[in-house]
Length: 103
Image 1: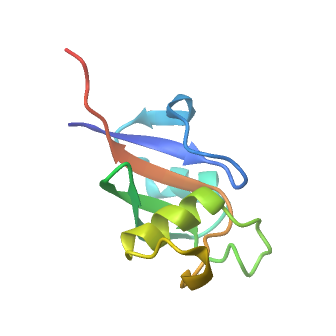
Image 2 (image 1 turned 30 degrees about the vertical axis):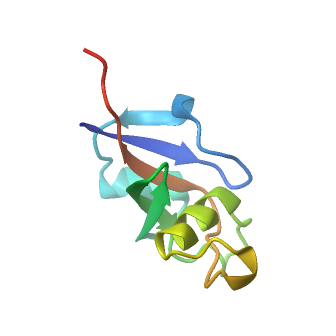
Image 3 (image 1 turned 120 degrees about the vertical axis):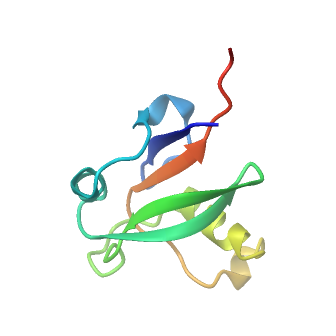
């Protein structure tokens, strides 16, 4: 299954229409999309482990919390109760997700 890169805006939700491209983005493209230096964190979405590229200093710069990414991040750690979240993700994120293609 090929990977696709998607953008999930802070305050938004995952949407298949927000595909940036099939395949990976370059470092420069990732930094442009998140607005700064990137950090790679794992998430879990639809039972699949995903890579999320986040703004490394999103919280420092006061970016809004990305609830969707925060849920995925904590679920990858096995935490589903928001009262027990270990951290939050701030700002827009880029997601690499494998997609089954119809032939």
